[in-house]
Image 1 (spheres, rainbow, N blue to C red):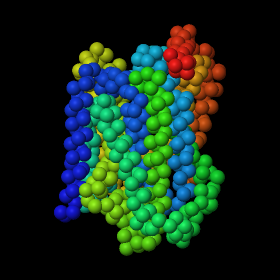
Image 2 (image 1 turned 45 degrees about the vertical axis):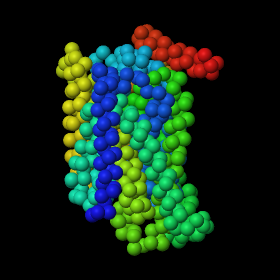
Image 3 (image 1 turned 180 degrees about the vertical axis):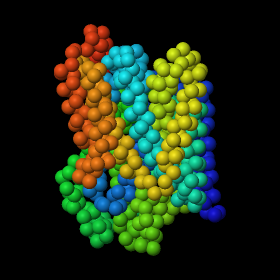
Image 4 (image 1 turned 90 degrees about the vertical axis):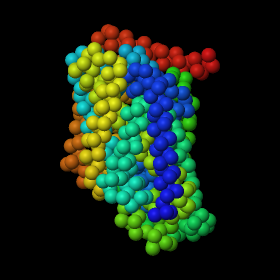
Length: 504
């Protein structure tokens, strides 16, 4: 037990640091806008790293390395698809969404933006989008709870239930206290921890095997015959399904909210370069952990029992084997950082949706800013309890939970976000139908046609896009004021881009 003390001390220090950041952010939180969007004050660095950290959850250090260890480089198509999708999201969505949400009555949440963009006076679109967020984020938050619980269980040898509550309380505390600013500032720190952990671990594992590259690939080939090939042993449908993960980026509320909070469109290009560099290095490190792990545990079968029982623990097992307890504590804190950064943002998005899109318009229209902040904190607790309940099964797999929620958001919101930012002719009815079709397709496909091997985001995204275009074209054109606000936002965005190009 004494060997675990340095790791435990490191974890305690890390969690205390996050809570202290939350307390500092508490002093900077003056109203509900500050609590859920940070007053739209994030610079390029914080925008980039907080977007990356909130995106790359526990699946990056658990689900992806485990999939690579189990199946080889064919699973790297997920990383390729994500990289392309993230880059396109920064190019086509980030700057436009920043401007449009400000023009659309300073919208603070995605449902708020949708309601303003399409003049949803009956609040149908607002309610449906809020329900979609709550349904899929409950699953997404559960994946974060599972990842955190598996981490604490693996390191400290405690029961899964105890580990689940510890990891949940650690995250809930600073979200409730500091809100968006606390999450964004801690995400920046956590992003640094994550990239450190993902770069040092595969390097140390490689050196532990021997630095002969040919020897490593030969060992891997003997353990997994198709592990070295991107195309061998995988169908075209499987590759398409893996790459299709990239479609999910356009509809993830916890990522899109970072674009909304940027201080200006001018902060976006630098943020994009930082974010994409960080992301490529992190994904490469995650793939390398799983890939090199095939060779390492082939050479050391006596150490492979835990990894073979649950491949998603490969990063944690490597850390315990390769590093002294002090360094292990820092590296393992990288996993905790990945879990906490994403989970905290998801909890806040759920909280803001419940508060801004349901509580304020339907229960307390004249609620004060202070009341809204405290209701938001209470909602964080409520959503957390639901996520803990969903995560109570210790056999839950992080990657499968993330895949379902990722597809749900990507199909329900992705086409809606892209088309609403690029086409002024899109109508309210089209937005409603497109969102419902996307979400329903994912749920139905997952539960009835999953055996076809096609990732449910593909039909969901396609059918939602078709529904939006068809309904918009047969519907009457949007009202003049709706089109006018779109044109104002579009012109401002283009003016900002032109000014950046001329250096004004």
